[in-house]
Length: 88
Image 1 (cartoon, one colour):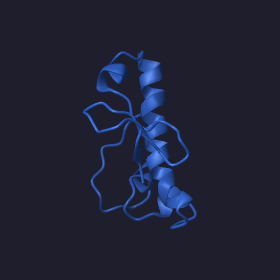
Image 2 (tube, helix red, strand yellow):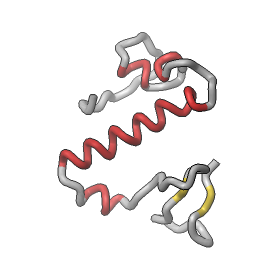
Image 3 (cartoon, one colour):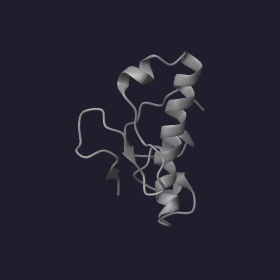
Image 4 (tube, helix red, strand yellow):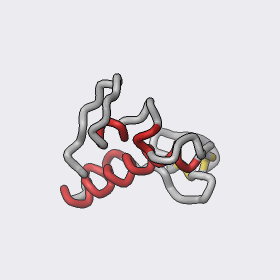
């Protein structure tokens, strides 16, 4: 569960995960990144999302979670239509 870092949610407020790390940033900040940094940023977020079922001990590997795009990135069969990003 995320908590508000500031008093109220606004369009670009920064959320914090339970361990205190920032989980979001503004669209403007992302757009201003150089292409390499932008790819690293997106890859970090995709890896974070894929690792959630593992952290919650639902599965052992990210691609084992049926409703995850990690299956698509691993080349496994999946009923979800996913647009794969060329980041990995």
